[in-house]
Image (tube, rainbow, N blue to C red; front, side, top):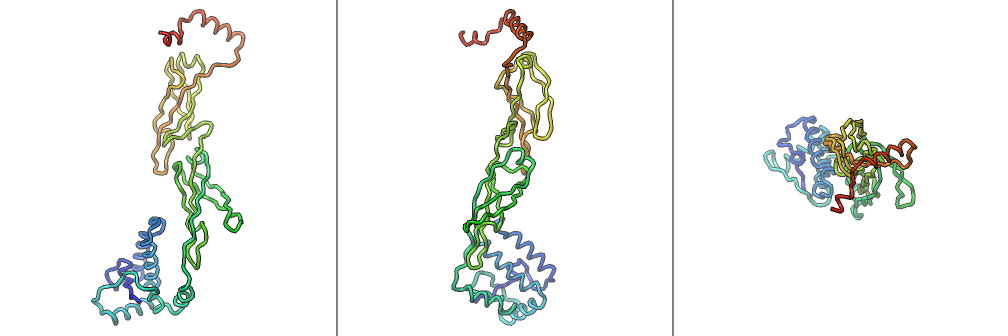
Length: 294
């Protein structure tokens, strides 16, 4: 069994440190090798086990003193540390009693395995993605039971982005950690907005006379309204860009709002409107098909 240098595992250069310094070193090391920041890295998983083991011994003054005495008697005060992975078992039982050793003996013949991850997909509207929300989802587990989970969807999440819920997957075996739940977010377009990257697209409906004469009007963005000027003679399919009024992602970057023009002809006309259109037909020389013929 290899005698590990717990100080080196916690990136401490000497054993002459206070309990507070050990706690600070532990927090820094645990953050560096946290599973969320090292997904799929088996070395990081082993490293975090060593870090937790070192902290258990060194954070208690009595076990720290016992560890220091044992280290000095074996290697001398100036010997360098052994810090790699050793044989099965650890030196933890030398300082914390036989509890850990008993657990190890009981599970030695059984393979510890982490539970499988579960992947699922949920649909949310573009408005829900823009503002963030909490959403209840129901999962059918292997034993047939329904598990309800509240998912916090952060503001500005990206389309196709995944949310990881640690330990919400399938159970581990023989004391192994549970798997994780991975939730893929699918952002659906609404009646008002369509999301493309960080840009929002919306339809701006105009009457024939507004398109012909030009008009000042308001365009609804996600969180307010913006007044814009429509130039005379604008056509269906043309676009007007309103900078910085698009989708705001999780990094605070905002896209643009793109207003797509659609000229809408009234389906029903009053008697007076019909007369005006007839008069316009008589006096107007405009013929859009003439250009196609020529």
